[in-house]
Structures are given as C-alpha cells and as structure tokens.
Length: 124
Ligand SMILES: [Fe+2]
Image 1 (cartoon, rainbow, N blue to C red):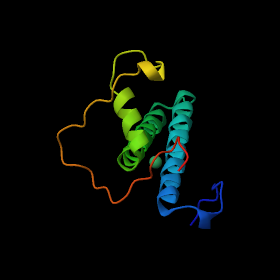
Image 2 (image 1 turned 90 degrees about the vertical axis):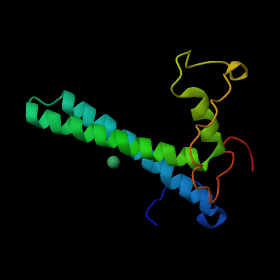
Image 3 (image 1 turned 30 degrees about the horizontal axis):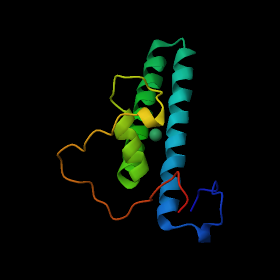
C-alpha cells in the first residue's frame, strides 16, 4: 500500500480504519488540488489556460465530494454531522447542545453497509 501517513502500526489498525485513512488522505489531496488549481487560475493571464485550470479545479471538487460521500456512508459520525450541518441556512457555528437535530435520511434505498468505521471522536 502506498500511503505512508499512518500514525499507528499498520498491523494494529482495522481494515475499516485503513479504508477511512485512505479516504481522508485522498480527500485532503483533492482539496489541496482545488486550492492549487484556483490559485494557478487566478495567476494565469492566458484565458484558455485559465479556463482549463478552472475546469480542473471543478473536477477536483467533484472528486472531493465523492470521497466525502463515501465517508458519510461508512461513518455514523460523519453521517450525523453532515446531516446536521450541510444544506442548512442557519448559523454554521452553533453550540453543540443547540445544534439542530440531523435531517432525517431521504427516502431512498439505503447505501450498502458492509461495515462502518464507528465513532471517530470517541474511544473504541
Ligand atoms: Fe482528483
């Protein structure tokens, strides 16, 4: 495996933790690419090249969104937090005790759940 940014011995990590690590590191890379392409587009004087760079930036946003959705489907904590905070109109920063209840799941077929990674905030 190519990822070398694990913070614990690989043989002590569950398959689910390693999968989550790969998704999180990939999400970080995609967001980094979004930032790079946006800065390069701002700094580019050639209109055609600027448009290519912006196109590439939008593609990286798509990739990041796919990874975020994978995390949501595989982590109850991500699912709860994203349901509570995304696509809302109120204050973004709210006291956790005052946070709105997560929106109910849409009526669509459940995502395949072969496993979950469990809580990422609390000790196992
Ligand atoms: Fe990408």
